[in-house]
Length: 246
Image (cartoon, rainbow, N blue to C red; front, side, top):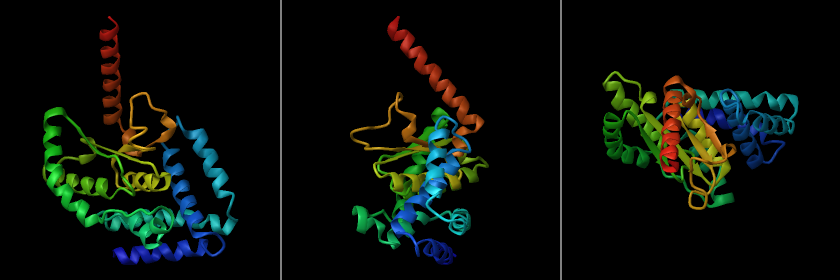
């Protein structure tokens, strides 16, 4: 099933790459999909990302433009057929984009799965104590580690009749915009609550007063339960600031 999904995806992708550089097509595909998802929920960054979407899609003629939604649908179907994979990361490495352009090498999903099985139970224990927990990958790549964590957490919570989406927040950061958005797409389609920051983790780590234009929030992050938690967190910050100033 996984091989068929990849071959089906690549068949459509290569049609676009006939008249355009394959790396450019890949960047544009990831950008278009990410902007479409973000603009369905994140109104703070809507205008800038809508402009990015429009300027990107104009590079292609009418027939080519119709292929991008098809590629998005193939990605969604592939993850639905088999969520236990880093679909975009596998294609990215298979097309030799990592070696040719950036010298990247993504950790194989099976290794990420093994690590998740060893660590996620303790994350669930943290949830029992505090109500929710976070999984943070400071060099997330296409998201294999976070995806594996989500799948293991889902299995554990399903056994308890609970929804993992309500208890775990998935955070990622990567200096490479393309792969960071690949992670964002996959987490969004897998129903994970969380966000990705594009930037250097060492020089520009996540902070409470960050520029939100660097952040990409998944749709589930905007559900009611996480909205309440964000509000409570903001109140905690205000109380702490008030106490310090007082």
